[in-house]
Length: 79
Image (cartoon, rainbow, N blue to C red):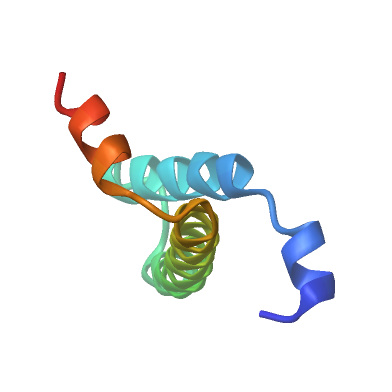
């Protein structure tokens, strides 16, 4: 994903679209051709979501590293 794509990508909307695709496929509302198109769209959305999650994880890691000592943060999270 490019920087421009990052700004246009809406994670929550993508998840909502995925849920709608899954629901319509599970309910048998789609023809075989439409099911294949929905599956293809679902794969694309899944990959975009995975990329967004990976990017967010990297940003969090950078922020943690900038703060220095992460042991204090880890022990606070375990309380």
